[in-house]
Length: 67
Image (tube, rainbow, N blue to C red):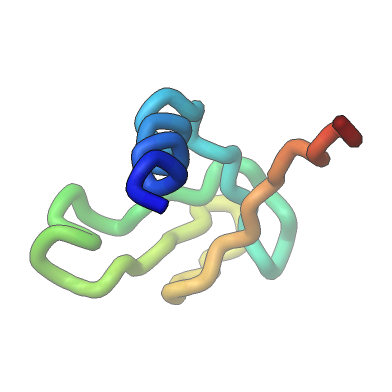
């Protein structure tokens, strides 16, 4: 069980961040409102294209290949 946990944590460290998109206009320009988000304050995303401001952002994940 500990080995499985190590594998999962290792994959998380090596994986690239997933692209985020605005949930309102689907723009990829969405970003955190402050560099202190997540660390000091709850995360707050801002979209300069449509003005969205909120805690939700869509993420694009790669589909897993069948082994």
